[in-house]
Image (tube, rainbow over the protein chains, first blue to last red):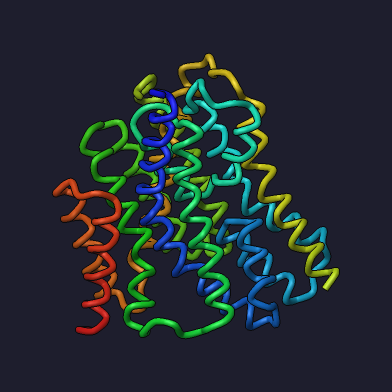
Length: 236
Length: 100
């Protein structure tokens, strides 16, 4: 059974690549759980938000609006705008899927498209199979949900210096993804430098203070990937 | 309770739609080389924009974040795995938190 062996290998590789994401998610979602408990939600309801949404900025915004008793329309529009960047990632991932991926499996894989899971899946060598994506999603979904529950139930589980240090786990993983990529291709280096420059501009320039983090990522991505495609077309 | 459950349902829906629509509508390969290269560059652009300057504020103090960043860069240059780099950054930031 060579085929099922391959699926197992892909799934295991996914689990392995998902571990640092799960670790980082645990820390961030604990903060979400604490905030959710702060507006009076039970740990189970907070965890329900995390399982069904699996996103950071959108959940934090939604929670704030729920706390303020906003209308469902207002919640829907705000969260949708923050999550529009997933359109771009989903489209990008659609071009990387293995031919073996069945149509119904796309509906399952779609739920796993977060900023972090998407970049890890995209930067993997070769096409993205269903087994790999499933393995990659599993631990981060668990970490995100469990972290939310524990954050809401028990506020201070870890000593502060360690809890705080976990906040850098995701970024450490980003660095581990970025460095090999920019060493391998000058085109990617240019795209990354433009994206970082724009991101810093939006963050530090008071003119852009009103820009949400979701909108900033969309603008940085469209401009830098667009320039990259114009200057260095057809690079893999 | 009805309000909260409805709000969660709305949030889940507007989060899932942008994730699922392109993935299920675009089942073939795009023909245009421009769009193909654009979409191939998207993950690197997202990664760059997400990492900087966010990494500098990932922990309570700037020195501990810088120590974590530097450690991650060194570990990544030595071709360590994703998990190893992430754990090295956490360990360095934790030490930074105790020192500074």
